[in-house]
Image: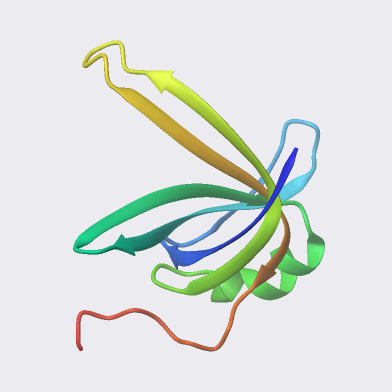
Length: 110
């Protein structure tokens, strides 16, 4: 596996679930935007954490728009849409650490 540190903002509130084998986990997606000259590129990362501290103590802060820094193991999966024949790349991270700096939420106000 590949280790990654990625930052971004949550696309929607995190969801706590229980897997088929009874293991509790939390899932959320973050958007990471980079700028190259006048070009903006946003990539999406699906994050899963099995860490009890993240689930029990940090889950309430993992809400839409919150800024996070995630460290974890990164996997990439590619799929081709049957309908459009377009290539999609899915980034998945199994988080080993989730840091929520006190930066607040992104708003539409400047």
